[in-house]
Image (tube, rainbow, N blue to C red):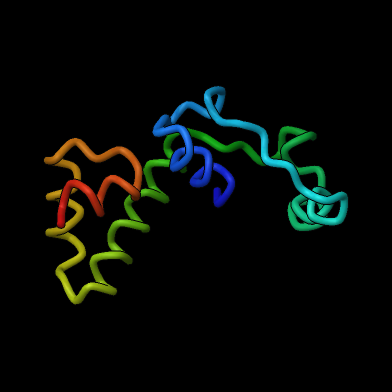
Length: 94
């Protein structure tokens, strides 16, 4: 998800197809496979839109908590403002 966040930040697009490939050294390229093994390759692990939305909610609420704000109210403000990615929270709900 960190790489996805970098893509969103770099292109201002939520669509991964719009993101530039990230160049990494061979050791770094192996690390995700060591962490999740072949879960995605074998269709055991599935990354869905629902998981992205859930992660966005968690990230927005954590940002609110770190700022000393009510996380539920801030998430509601985020949704009402049309936020789609946790980066939007910083722009839409200053």
